[in-house]
Length: 201
Image (cartoon, rainbow, N blue to C red; front, side, top):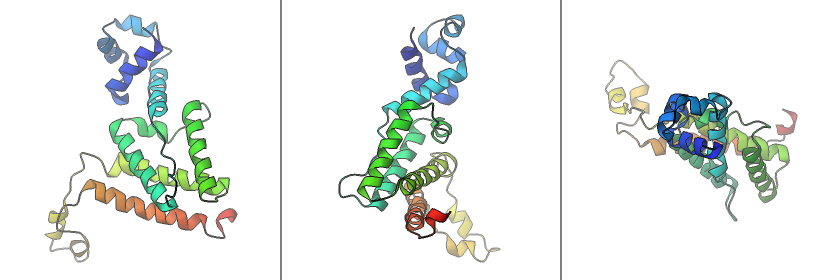
């Protein structure tokens, strides 16, 4: 049993289900054997999260791609990552100096933004981080696979005056809802970094 096999088992289990017991069952070993090969379950989860991020291709701007489109693609890819690996959102928003591989990838992507769009390091870091934070939060908390759509019920509420007129009678796709929410965040981020007051914040 190696750190690599434990990490691979953790990825298959998904982060919320990683425990000493589930790892032992997954690998066909005793709980004692797991304890003898780890520094604690939190350390295992950190390794699993790091490996997930190491395997993920952090989306960088493509040649000729607009800043708006690059940030939108980043948001959509992050949503796919969050939904594909339950529990990873917590680690994404807490990437620190100890996350060597992930931080190096993020730095390279932000450098590409700075170079391609003639942004200062502060503008590039802020725009990418802000869009990423919004995408992760929406993917984890709002636009989730099990979210229930209730537009028809909202339209039927005759005791309300504005909400029934402001929502669609048809249930919209979660993809569409997410993309429009993120479009607002992206347009806002691009506008903010272009504001003369940005460096004074």
